[in-house]
Image (cartoon, rainbow, N blue to C red):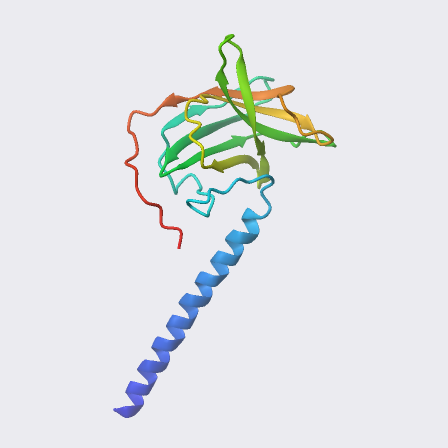
Length: 184
């Protein structure tokens, strides 16, 4: 009977060790992936970039192809618990020209009727698609325009030049209930 008890304790210890090591591997892999996303903005409130399945979005839109090159995609935004998030995923986007990269922008109409855009960072290639993720502590929900552009790597663009895709975000029918996001 003593031997069965020892075997049971040994099995429990092994199972716990596998679970803990699996968790550590997932955390390390996630951290390594997030470090490859250029210009990522991480909210002090959440401490992590949330993916599309980790958040319910207030606004969303399909991305329109401005150059007729076959791209498609979706952009989502939200402001929950002091964290503004933009998550866009673009399909069928060819790699940019040498010395160029793709930038995401959010915009709002100014008093003169023109749209003023703010650069929210680079779009990163992830397998066969590009993602543009931004997270910050300022509520920018009133920035209802999204734009994807190709810019030269030699400058930090203040305005978009070569426009590739755009979207006008609309409020979703079902709104999220504000909740605390567990980042532990």
